[in-house]
Amino acid sequence: MGRSPSCSKYEDQSLNRGAWTASEDKILSEYIATHEDGGWRSLPKRAGLKRCGKSCRLRWLNYLRPDIKRGNISPEEDELLVRLHRLLGNRWSLIAGRLPGRTDNEIKNYWNIQLSKRVQMGEFEPKFQNIFKRREILSSSKKDVVEKDNYTSQTLPLKTRAVRYSGRPVVDGNNNESYSYDHEQDTHDGINQEEGLKAADQAVEIDTSKSWCQLLLEDCMGNYQHDRLEEIHGFQPNSVLNTSNGTDDHPLFPSTSLSQSIILQENSSSSSYCNLINQDFPHSKDFNSSYFDSFLDLGELSILLP
DNA sequence: AAGACACACAACCGCGAATAA
DNA sequence: ATTATTCGCGGTTGTGTGTCT
Image (cartoon, rainbow, N blue to C red):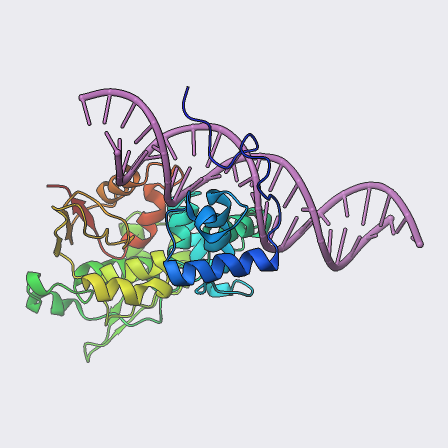
């Protein structure tokens, strides 16, 4: 037998329930403006409200807080929300934390009422648009001059993967590459023509000014969050994110504390990465390596636990 | 015009985690 | 270390409004 739940129907019948009135809102807002929020249990008594603390907290967090963003959810927010839900599942507060000004309740309602249906209709199939940009693939000769410590997207893995998607590069007398489809080469590699042509049709254009880590994270999280991610970690491959004190951020989910060190390396598979995600976010049942493999074909990523 | 239905949003409930005593 | 208390989360319900028949 635990304690009876606070703010339940069994509690003090004299407390107001249901919709909040304007005057109640005013009292709560003014009280918090001068006393800060928190101490919800005792707040109603202190503020002179006939509400339970739980109700006050909910009203403040979901409605009265000054930084709440009003108005329709934008297409950019839609897309980010879908990406986050794909990764995190129904972890609404975590998702809402990545959508500034939106509340978990709002996100949850929005998802349940309309976004989930739109997802089912296939509106948000992964587009990989950030990774696949216009053809701009550097010569493989650059691989030899790039030091490992300065590893960037301009090294071989990106190039080879991109070529696989686009057909085969043809080098002319001036050492310029073009990407007409090379059926013979694909046959030699065991790829049939239909497959090769289909792949070649996909946009395979890479922003070579960014590391594949950046590209991966942008595509995963959307540009929306990328600036902040970069600001925090820089996103250099091989970087060690020291989380030994358990307070540093997870690279994908910046406000989430972890107690593990994470090392990003350039030459591995997605499986260990996926394992880590699933370990950290066990409720993300739908998360699997195939989703990330789509990204990781452009480079390779592993996260090694110490 | 009126009832049925769908939708959007606010609010409630119970549980587990976190924290305090 | 244990127990009591508070907080925060996610699922669910209630209610107001708009649309359709």
